[in-house]
Length: 137
Image (cartoon, rainbow, N blue to C red; front, side):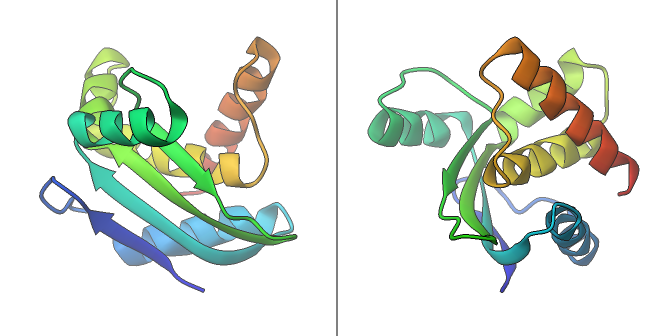
């Protein structure tokens, strides 16, 4: 099944698509799961704010929203990514846009793999997993 990239109201990103697809697939298989249909939808802050309001009843900006369509071991979902937030976070954390984008891409798939990040201890595990998989990119 495919890993696909879409752009809603932003211009297409320069992304090594084949490498990213291979990497995300290897992350999924490393967790003993099967890659299903994973869609990354790149958009603006305003677009993602509307998604957040409409589907989650949240009225705030966020960098990522993941919709989980996982069935058994097949990892599938829609991962909405705010390009504006990624850019701002890259500046804030003093990393390149591409590095922050990779972190967000793997963060979304880790949610699909069942890793939460609401509690402090969950955030620690999430960050460790992100770092682990960023290292193999």
